[in-house]
Image (cartoon, rainbow, N blue to C red; front, top):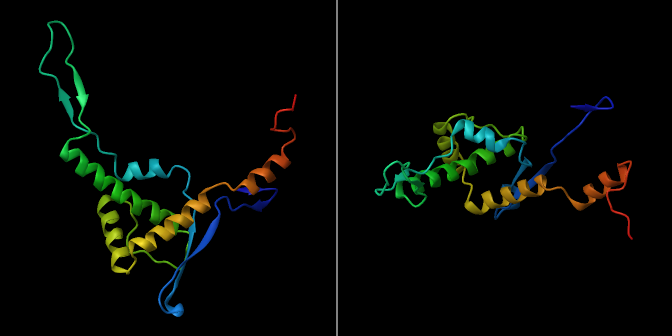
Length: 165
């Protein structure tokens, strides 16, 4: 995308440092905020599981079957847990992809490659704490800071603030 002939960096890119006991072993990564449509992209790779349908045993003559979704089904809880677990790694992959120094062995385009990517991160020695630090940076890159809102408001031709009566 270009504005006035200049390329625009829509998503902010932040550096995140994963500290290690020796300073020279610390890892610096680049992350961006969540891309637009990331949830839809994930569901294209791994559709969200649906809970099983439970049919009521009691039906009056001429009425439709009474059905409900069983969100407490052990099978559903297992499937949704796996789906949420891999969602975290899909988000990580997309937000780390701005760091051109990283080379991933897996592209996260299938459920199997997502599972391999999760193992790839584990094998790389990243801890849950490291993942938390990375997600914190992703959240910061995603948020619109008050300063940016104020700058945007100042460029509007009309005031967004209602007049004081």
